[in-house]
Image (tube, rainbow, N blue to C red):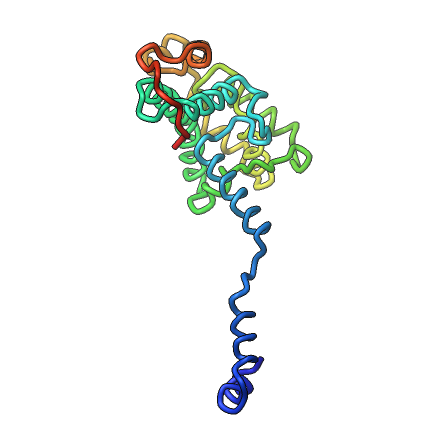
Length: 235
């Protein structure tokens, strides 16, 4: 309804047409289902950014030992009384795993910025849960380079298989003709280390068997000093 006609209605006619127009203006532009979809997608993005899942396309987080351990820690903490000793200890273990993943990501970001991708580094490092191997342009070459980084550099903090999320990043770098330069920089900045060097420089490396043992203890019997406490939701 035009503004001039609306003024005419207000001055000479009943107000029904104006009320009808107001009701149309108050109707939401997006449906409830659409809003719920956007909310779910936002939560998935926050989840990826916070936990940096090694296998981003696995919604169950069970295909890799490290992802499964972190996921089980999060699930166990969600069932533990907030503020209890058990809750605090689980939070420490969760943050330790997240810190290890952030450290690897920071190494990649530093090399990308050194290669000149100052403005693009964050976008290049973002891997969503919808990442698909079918959409990769150079999957075989990317996997070969990922293995090279794993065996010939110390850019990863573990002897376990490298996180699959970096396969997608390497595929992007191959498309940008920057993958070989990235590997060369990684060899220079993060040369391989001996096992003794890893233990001296990283005395707090994640011990997955120990974390799994703690999870089983919480599931089977809970904390001895927290008996009788009720469970509460996760932060």
